[in-house]
Each structure stands twice: as C-alpha cells, then as structure tokens.
Amino acid sequence: MVSFRAVDTPSLRRGWTTGACAAAAARAAAEGLLTGQFPDPVAIRLPGGGTAAFALAETLRLPGAVMAAIVKDAGDDPDVTHGALIRVTLSLGVPLSGVTFRAGPGVGIVTLPGLPVPPGEPAINPVPRRMIAEALAEAAALFGGGSDWVVEVSVPGGELLAERTMNGRLGIRGGLSILGTTGIVIPYSCAAWIDSIRRGIDVARATGITHVAAATGRTSEEAVQRLYGLPDQALLDMGDFVGGTLKYLRRHPVARVTLAGGLAKMTKLAQGRLDLHSKRGGVDGDALGALAVRLGASAGQAALIATANTTAQAFYFAGSLPLAATIAAEAHRVAQSVLEDAPIRLDVLLIDREGRVVASHQP
Image (cartoon, rainbow, N blue to C red; front, side, top):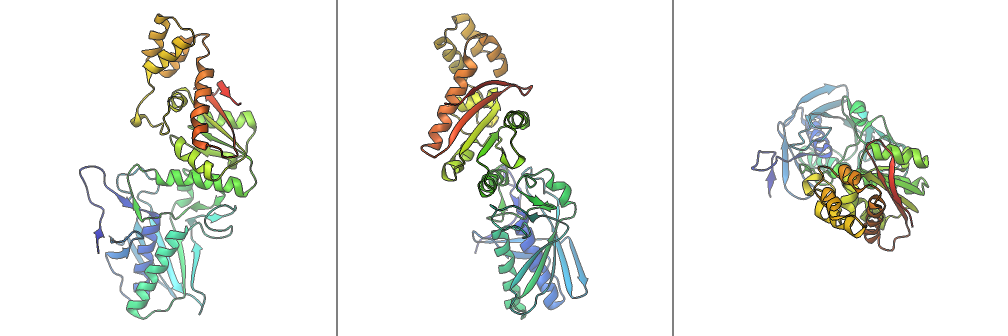
C-alpha cells in the first residue's frame, strides 16, 4: 500500500481536504473512545488508495463523548480553510441508527435542493461522510466497537470563513462545507472553486431558476445583476473557468445563460481560449490588430491596437470601429461551440472596469 504525507517537493506542496481532516479526527476520536488512548499521528485510508497520517492538535474527554481535532494543511494551495481547526466530537449512537452526522459550530446546514446532500442535513459531502464512516468501522473492527455513532463536525471561526466562499449562494447557512473527493488538495487546481460553480448550476436548476449569469469577476457580476435583476442564486462566479462552466452547462442545461466579463478575458475567449487565467497567456495583440484591419482600420491604427499596453487601450485605439461588438460575437461563437446543441439561449456581455456594458451579442 502506498502512503502519502505532505512534504515539500521541487514544485508545490500538496495538502489535505477538510473531509480528510474530519475523517482522521473521527478515527482518532473512535480509538480514544474505545481504548482511552488517542493515536498520534493518526492514519486513514484515502479514497483513491494509500494512506495519510495526521498529527492531532487537540483531544478532550467529555461525559459520554470524546473530541479530537486536526489543523487543516492545504499545502501551497491558497485555500480559505488553510490553518482551520477541524474538530470531531464523537459519541455512541442508539442501536441500529448507523452513523449520524451533526453540524457543530462553523459547519453549515443545507437549505436548498440541488446539492449532494438534502436540505436540513449538515453540509458534509458524500465522500467525506464515507471516509468518516470507513474510519469509524476500521476502529471498531480493531478495538471491539459497534457501528452506531454520532459524529459532530465543527470548525471554530467557520462562519466567518464561509463568507469568503460561495456557500451563501448555494443555500448553505451557518458555516463551511466539509469537502473533498480524493482527500488530497492539489495546489492551484481550484477544485473547490470549480465544484462551487457546478453546485451553483445544480441549485439553480433545482430551485427553478431559468436564467443564470456566469461572470469573470465582481464588477462584471454586479453589472449583469443590475441589468437583469437576477437573484444571488442565479449568479455563478466563473472566474477564469469558462470552459469548465460551459461544459457542465452543456450536460446540465439552464434555459438562458449570460456570460459576462471584462474586455481582456472576453477577448481571450473570442480568440478561442477556454481557460482565461493570465498564466495561460494574454490577449493576442497581433490577432486583434489583424481583426481591426478586417473591420476597416488603417495600418497605423491597427499597429496601435496590436501593440497597446492593455486590452482596454486597444479598444480605445479602435475608436468607432465595431471591435467590441465583433469580439462579443466571436466570444459567443466560441462559447456556443462548447455548448453544442444544448437547449440554452446564450448571450455575451463585455463589461468595462466601471461596470458599463461595452458590447453584447444575443442572436
């Protein structure tokens, strides 16, 4: 069996999901309850195979229960939960009740349909639930316990951390979600962000929303919300992940979709980019200049556009040329090619830094 541990590598250090930390805390708590001794470090099995070991940050014996806690280490990923304390308070359940999950302070409750767990349940996703249940079963098999447990997961300060996530829009109230499908956080994979986009689409569909807007940033999002009067649940913080957003919408369509973004990001989409992050490359100035020529620009004007310091400056140099409208139409064409024949009415908005609609395309 392969074992994993969070170590420095020549590139970026991996970390652990909140779900893995909760499973490890539950495993330590189970052993503490059954034997009176807490294993430190405590090891768990990961969903994809292998094991991971965690140091305990806290242990506590309570009347009829025990608590164990682990500090989440997200490695080199800029995760809002990095350094958070993941606590599990464990007690024996009533016979034949199985594993019962409860949300402690800092862990949210699901209030809207469309998420992997139903409304009224703690926001502990299915894979972390399975990891916790398997960790408890392993402890019981080793130390003579049963299969009925009450598991309360809490994250001190989780309510404030949740304000920096998309939980509010997803209808998760009171704190964070306990997440993870592999147990491992890969730095800058943005897996939680992408998952939130997908869950946002799921919630919109489940609550009957027929028009969603996917924006690349806060300014674009505020502009499109003002324009259409959309509720918060209809807004998708797409960021740079336009390709992933469109591909998920293709499989899970919403009747109307608006893509809204700044000039640079939407120009990159128009030029065929589906990952809009600056690390994947900037706007192709030469292609933008060539497009300007086709729209009637002089050689000098096209040169100014091609060599502009910023995309906003390039659009300024375009003057009365229909450059923005053409970029909106091209961005629509690229996006529509990803959606293929999904039953979606698509429109595209280009938003400037002041939140004004510079151009739009809606066939």
